[in-house]
Length: 509
Image (cartoon, rainbow, N blue to C red):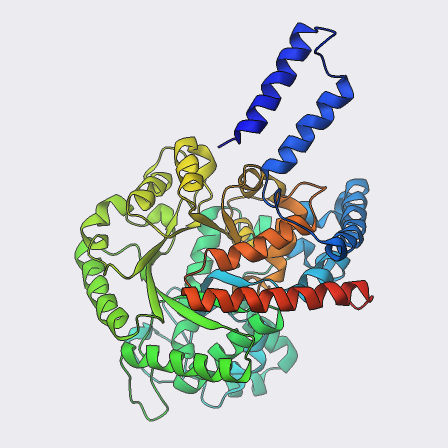
């Protein structure tokens, strides 16, 4: 994993210092600077070139970054880089670094779940005001939102209440909307009290998919929601997305239902229309997301479905994944008979190692993901505990899809500076920055995850080289075709150059 020149350099430095031979020993300062320079060369962005204009922007960016870090060092209450996102968000929203990242072209997002991809504010302000939205409650007290009545699939025991009537009859519609948003947003000012364990936060998190899923499957809501998904990505200067989706059947106001093949067609039509209106947006591709708690026969059925869809839409329905809480799901090893039957032209994008366990079936999923020839690894949080596997990931150039905010909100790490992504950056393990489920934790698009990547995972002195490397990585490790990839690089080079000019003209900071 270490470049030979760096190894030789470090060995020479150590030998010289230990033997203390005057004719060969470097000065203390020379030895110190040589090691620091070697580490900088080794990490993500270490070999990324900056032209003279980019170097000027880097100087400006570092003034803001180091200023914010110094403020946080002096006052822990201002240290957004070390705080839980729910507590840090007001600080981040006022941050010059964050403003820079919002304006910066970010390339592609390669790990995003469609049902949680849109900001919860939009769901409240737009989708919940659509005529006909209903709410009911299950025996466990979970709310279900829908546009159809008395569906057995809801499992509700309460009456169906019109959301519009409930809002109108409330004392304060604004307060109603705030409470309504909590049905599908994990935000709380006291996450350590409201979600004291990983079990408690995952229980609430998974419930939110069931709360919102059927409402999004209403055809008019489905179209508006996924259009907004692309709008939020585009407005955050993201140019392409690979979206995980379970492809639920759609329904309309007349009660008609549509097949999941129709769902794919709807998404493809929306994608084509959005790209026509936004020529510098390359669109989306789909990764079929199957619940990992199913047995091997059920997964085999899902693989058979995927095979048909992939044959019909080979450039749009491109990959297969297993989702859900990995600790409680089936190990990949138990599902091998199903996963080996994927079409040769399709790719696996497997969640693996999204856990704090070491030597359990969950982190050993990383091994099986590699043996199954996964194209990328989703999360890979436990990869740092497996040096042989980490070396294989680097040697085989398999990108790890880092989701910093997701890992924090879902209880894998509190202080983001302790995230293993910092180690992956230090060793130049291939990584891409992703956002997972931003709508469910009061975020939007990709900039918040980039903030933690550069402020918490990257070393203090890392700036534009790292950011540029991460942007280009997102295209390099995507499943764009060769032709699409060339176009993507051309677009990002143009938008990056314009961004650099804006910064130098004083239009960003």
